[in-house]
Length: 186
Image 1: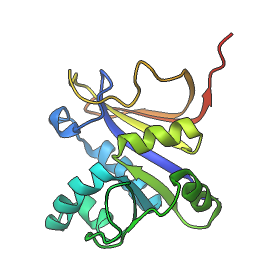
Image 2: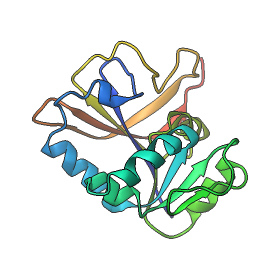
Image 3: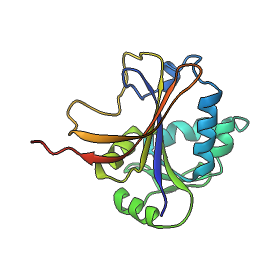
Image 4: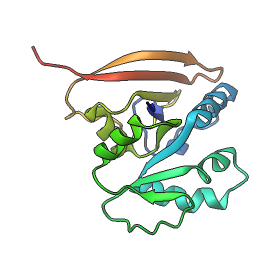
């Protein structure tokens, strides 16, 4: 059985959108090592439309970057209701059918981790469907102020279990959570 993971950079105030706006100089060796472990365990990447469109133009143009050496050749499954099946970025395939059914089938198969990269709406959908095994929040020591958050005030209560936690030399906090359980109101 494969593990479904996601790692999101976040600010102290919970913003996960456009982390380059609040990361500043906080990316350190420990965070890089964690990213290396994440990449080494992953054999399939799941992307939403927005992340796909942003990354498909950026990463192929920067092949020397360590993340580009990971993301460009890896199998990428793209979740979209608006993109056509002919995706230009190498090793990219449009998810055909219901995302949750496709993911259940992937989980039951053999291979490395399936990692949701970026793709806030996909992460949210999988968390609330109980199909995300691990969620790593890489909390940078900064307040973003504005931007999209992973969890919204209208979301139902959800119980997270801390699996691992690490503080890096530049003050990043790497918390890994899972599994996720809906909280039943008393």
